[in-house]
Length: 149
Image (cartoon, rainbow, N blue to C red; front, side, top):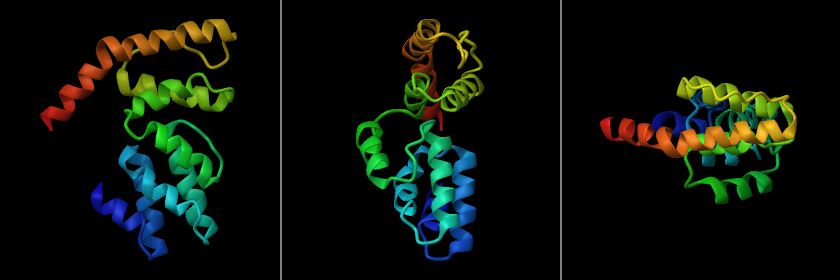
């Protein structure tokens, strides 16, 4: 991923675009900083690709504002990507909640009964079940994976 991050931040727009798309596909949380920088790119294609990748990686959509994404990053940089997705489950945007729930299910193989269109109290209960899974099982599983690689 280091090479892709370097290419994503590079001057060659064709390679940068390909690298940004690859980082998005890989869901590379380590690419957030380079993607933040590319939001201000003069080329609309690069800036839009960076925005799309940030949405995919974080589960959030803060538009193309580097300021708002910078604030997000200052608060979230030391958290696991799954924690970003857990927070996205509480967003007011249906699309973001749906995306986050699908990502969490794909990553974990767990279903908690969360549905993006449940009434707010039921959504919150299901979101808390996701948090309990992360605190009780998920975090340990990811820590073991990281040590094994």
